View 1 (cartoon, rainbow, N blue to C red):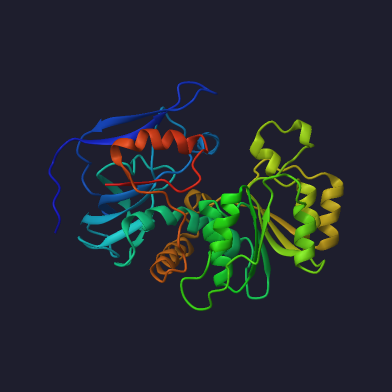
View 2 (cartoon, rainbow, N blue to C red; view 1 turned 90 degrees about the vertical axis):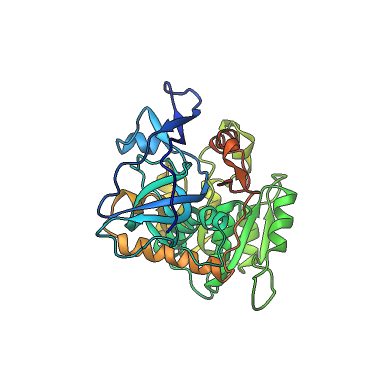
Length: 364
């Protein structure tokens, strides 16, 4: 069994002084962990991925506090288990996502986690890949397996496919036999998407057509209808949409987003639109168009699995499947070079400003 010295450890937290102010990320000294509970697993963290902290969601579910723990996607080695833990034993290699209400920062040498938030990590999957893929994997499964049913013969449009989430969504859709179309926000993204190939089997491109929207001249709806012979796509997974006319949009990135009317236009009969736009507004003509197509709109919020434990079994199946697909190289995540712990504050500031194009992972 591994042993950890009883010493004071540092953990990363974020502090938001008042509404609208930028977050401050600080390392806090923390004393030794409390005794391991009956269902708890004590994990020595080997890697922790950084993700944007949704303070609005935390506030809405009454989980906002002065110091918010940073880093929830972890991989590591089990040091100790509670007396009622049945799935794990010391020295097991594990991965998982700390719950939304966790007091633990994943950016700490040792954490306590309830066993129902962890799964075994296959030996051939490295620490960094396990931690760096688990959240995007959960998002992809939520979008393509639960909110829609991706299957052979279907056409899937993944917006911003070169993002960490987009990459995993493309790999899952293609693995399930779907034809994949994607958009690229830059020439570099376009080249990356065109180079994507399966790790095993046929070496055909994962993406049938890459639509480069970086110059603002390409019509996404027109391109998708052309690619599908006018039938439209079966599943759209967006990366945000333009709600208003171009002159009302403020940021350069929003200029690259498709308008909601474009999404509705390119949807096929019985299509599924999976949106990440929490403030989506549909006018009566929009709703009527969706009605005529028998299409649906679903909101992608991967935190649903943590906000309610009613589907805990399904959630653990998702985590296990993500690890299996990493092990078999179906999933090959879009990760940056591993980052040492002393650079975590700077890296988290970049992540919180949405300036990181690859998944940032801290390696211990």
